[in-house]
Image (tube, rainbow, N blue to C red; front, side, top):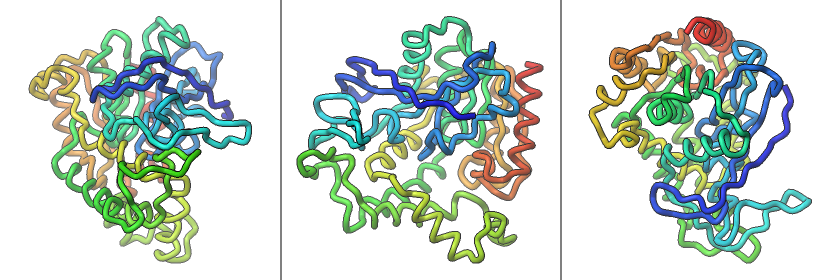
Length: 354
C-alpha cells in the first residue's frame, strides 16, 4: 500500500557516544492509518522503505503500521545527509544542502534508534497506548530486542526475524571482511577528508570501495545450498555472473560508504545487555515479559538458528519457528516467496493468539 514518507525532527539529540546533533531527523511511513491496532517496524541494515517487508496486506493488514527508518540508512539522519550546523535538508530539486563535514557518530547504538523511535511515537504522533507488535528483520530484529528490554510496558508482542539478542563473535568477524574491503579501497578517503563546498563529507562517493564491500558481503546473504541449486535462476538471471553483477552493483546504487560503516558498527555492537547494565544475557532475557516470536532461518550463515533456540530457552514467553528455506538470511527479508508466505501465516497466528 502506497504511503507518503514523513519526517520528524528531534532537537538537540544526543547519541550514546556523546555526539550531539542540533536536529536529528527520523523518516517514517504510516500505513493503514485508520486501523485500530498498532505495529512498529524499523528498517534493517541497508534497508529502505522500498525494500522493507511490512506484511501490510497479510498478517498486519488490520494494523496501522509505522515503518521507521534507522539512523544511518540514508533516509533518517545519516552521515550522508547530516551537516555540522543542521539536520538533513533538501531543496526543491531534492538535492541536499549541506556543509563540508558531518558530525554524525561513526558508530550508532541501538539505544539511539529506540530513543528516537520512542520520541516519534509518543511526542510527535501522540501515541500513549501500548504497541501491539514490534517487528524487525536482521539489524532491526536486534533493535526489536532492545525495545522489549527497555520499554516492556509499551511492547505487547515482538517478532524477531533472522536476528539475535547479541551479535556473535563469528557474526562480528564476518562483518570485518566487507568493512575492510571498503576501508582499504583506493577511493576511500576516511572520515577526515574534506568535501568540496556544497557537498556533505558523508556524501562523497566511493564506487570501488562500495563494490568491494558488496563483493565481500554477497555470498553470505544466502547459503551454499542456494548456490548449489542455482536459485538465482528464480530471480530471472541467466547466469551466476549476471546475478553477481546486479547484486554487487545496481543494488548498491545510492549507498554511501560512511552510511554503510555506521550501520555495520551498530550491528557489530549489538548486545541487549548494554541496555541493562551489562547483566548476564540469561538475566536480561529472563526479565522480558513480552511474548516474543523468534524466526531464524535454517540456512542463515550469520544469525544462526541455534542461537535463537538458546535465546528462546532464556526468555519467559517465547515461540521459535525456524524458516525452512535455502535462501539463508534473505529469506527473512522476503526474497523467497514460499518463505514469505510461511512467515506471514506464523506471524498472523502469533499476533492473534498471544
